[in-house]
Image 1 (cartoon, each protein chain N blue to C red):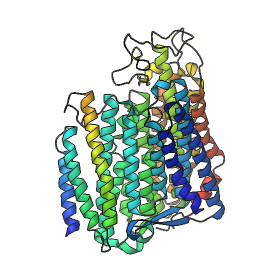
Image 2 (image 1 turned 180 degrees about the vertical axis):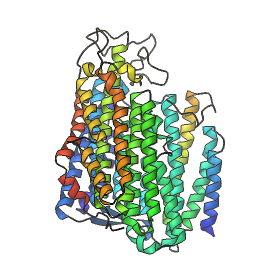
Image 3 (image 1 turned 45 degrees about the vertical axis):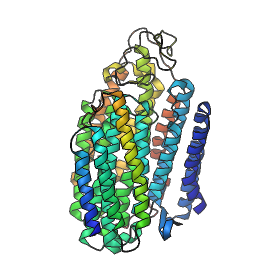
Image 4 (image 1 turned 90 degrees about the vertical axis):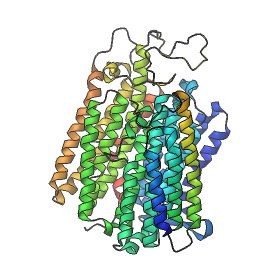
Amino acid sequence: MSVGLVSLLLAPLAGAGLTLALPGRHRAAAGGSVAVLVAVATLALAREVLAIGEAVRLVLPGPAGVEIALVADGLTVALLVMAAVVVAAVALFAVAEDLRVPERRHAAYWPLLFVLWAGLTALFLAGDLLTTYLMLELVALCGALLVTLRGDRASLLAGTRYFYAELAASTTMLLGIALVWSAAGTVTYEGLGTALAGDPVGTVGLAVVTAGLLVKVPLAPLHFWLPAAHTFAPSAVSPVLSGVMVKGALAVVLRLWFLGAPEALTPAAAQLLGALGAVAIVWGSVSALRASGLKRLIAFSTVAQLGIVFLLPPLVHAGEVDGWTGGVVLAVTHAVAKAAMLLAAAVIVDSARRAKAPTVQVGAPHRRERPAGTPPGRERLAGTPRTAPAGEPSWPVLDQLRGSVARRPVAVMAFGVAGLSLVGLPPTGGFVAKWYLLLASVASGQWWWVAVLVGGTLLTVGYLMRFVRPAFAPPPEGEVMAQRDARDVVALALAGVTLLVGVRPQPLLDLLLVGAPVVGG
Amino acid sequence: MGLWLGVVVFLVGLVLTFAGTRVDRRVPGFAVAAVGAVITVAASSARPAWPAAVTVALTLVPLVLVAAGLARRLDHVTRPGAATLDDDPR
């Protein structure tokens, strides 16, 4: 088991080295292969932890006698599987895109993706606050650089805003860690609960750490950096940012307050976190209802859905283990659904742009205009806004996506299935998550969270309908109909995972009970 | 003592980082904040905390360099010094 854990850490790093060393045309194939292998190994680890039925702890020797603790409990393994499934799907999408449009290839993409994955793996496994901090830094660095890969003004600005927000959050968190360390004499999650024991400096430290984490999650109104970063990141990056990376800080919040120092969380603080979640639901949903482009709509939807996950603290604090199950299942299914949605959106938008371009002829949808003197791969499609780089999908307003169902049926189906999970309709994983959250709300007598959940669900339907309406409208006459390629299939397969969780939720539910917080108020 | 000195240096750095709007002027402020954070970590434990402080410092150095690099890249695609973090691309 220990070998398996260390292998999971090292395998993405090996992928980074391999893709860095290989020439450009072989990078995608190598990257895709390594990603699938790591995903399979992660699933094998999950199966093993499920069979053992208890958390696995590993202590690695660090410099000057400092020990690095790794913990593989239900929460960790569920998040590792989530990351593996999403990153593997994104890697396959990137391979398909590389084969289709090789000029979009960027030398730094694969190494950065794999280093980010290794950082996320170590972050989920981290059993102490210092390792957590270091991995959050690594992940933020890779994430910001991935956002800027397109190199145009919009993506550079978005990546820079994201980077500074992460830096401010990280250093704030580091300050809090130092305060906790000085008060408790330890930074391991296991030791925090007893070591702090109501120490005011330690409690302030925990609050400062949490403030930094809430910027990283992000929880509204601290989400100022998210919409632009998620919108202007390349198509094969946004799903990782929106689905997986935001769960890194979320996992730390859950581990800190429910597995590390649960005694430090007062009822008022738990209700405050839930109230911030409710604010995020309304803020994110209203912003999504007002968004002009599809990707920006999806980005704001992430803000809203993260708000729903924050209904977990008041429910678990009230002694409802169903609140834990519902919250974590929601985090996992949201990652998968959101990634599938963003992959599908990239295909739909790309297809709509190509259909609109006057140089594109019926029956030859991939031909592009190349002005004299422009090198191959740097040509611009007519109608491309200034913010869109050559060869990348731009983000037309929603009304310009008319006829997407006829144009790209498989991708729209993937979007639809993922949307059902976001709404929380059966038989999707989103339904399972919201069902458990509802059960916990009712059982703990906190009816106001039922109202928030129902309201959030209705708002989700509302903003998703903004895409559905133009998508089902008839397309302009004379357009190429019903196209698909490997990217549509990857998006649909990923969306199908939410159905799998909905139909067979028991393995995930059992996994989440391994090392779950001892609830009881 | 060192702990609170680090906190003060960090807060001064944070204020410098977010004072003004130009991206390229924020890097020195962040460097000061990073130094404050390292001092805080180094002074936070009765046990020798230098391995943690050195590790943290080693991670903060590349972050400062990347911040500077991003500011330079922004200058290349806009007028030098014209980019601000208040610009929210849509």
